[in-house]
Image: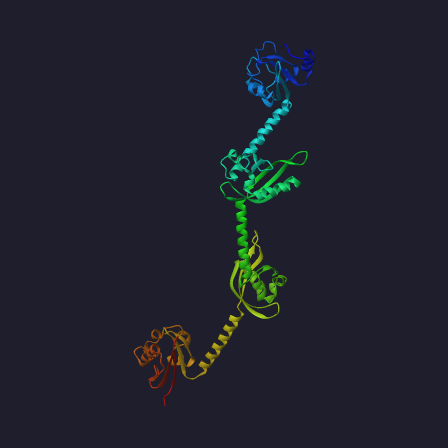
Length: 480
């Protein structure tokens, strides 16, 4: 072959080069190849091989236009020898090569060198394919971007998170647009930290929908410490964030209801130690603050009732409307109405008591006063020697004193709540019925005299007093 320049020097370099070298003429025909190239390409012998053309090459595919235009072309290829024609005898199956093709005066000089050993190349390709699969199938949105936010690469999950139909469409966007202020702040932090984990922020998808994301971001920097790329892993956390916000609002709502509830709410241990309570509970038991109430033991309010309630809760699970007289922390006596619920562990053991306490003291005291007054009136009415009874506006007995019961010949308890016309049919059609109805209907006081129902020889003086709720009847024996 003829090569311009010092052929001897060229030949020595060509033969002794640690890099595989091939020499082709201007038409692309292979004119020479060194031993390193033979070994790299796995060709065991040259004899008998047909002509191998650089531009029609089953081993190293090249494009003439690119080489002619650029002068020097570099690329890396995986040579798959399984596609090489049978007439080429090969020593291996595949190899990963770095190829440099130079356009020289007399033709083309091809330099080939193995990027990795055959085993390393195989492992590298396998690893690359595996991680490419992970990248494509990862449910986390993975991306690589410039510091300015231009997307270099992203996976399908990233495209889906931001509302794009494909990674190709997503790659045309700029991640800065999702939240300009956030990206600027992110880059500022990456300049000093280079790695940010668990960053939470709000982004806006390309369709305008707002999403909450959690991301891990890593900066790639050059030898001067300048960021060259930003690699990120983005998770759409919108549903969890919305659930968290809803739970927070719910907790705030119920905590507000708990604090503002006029019922005394508490949670205590089985021994009575207060674990939690609201302001109303503290006030009911005479404490100025919730903190003071939390230092107290509710069993001290009534040492006899608390063990009884705990026993019932163990058996029944809950107690409704339990009434008890108790003592506050300042020893003042109060009457409470309580609803209690037991909290049990997985073994069915009672571990806590949840209670709702209402201070019923005023009502109870009024009820006691009313009951006391009622007993006093009953005692007075029962002690008089004249008959007295009261009927509601439906003609039912609501009170009968002892003298009236004797007059009627019926026990008072048998009359209460019963209708007078059903229970005393002898009154129907008599002056009794006429007078009672007239007083009820016309709301006027009536007086009349009539013989006794059972003692016909006795004469009685009756007085009937109407009210909006019925009538009261008073009579006395006027027999002489």
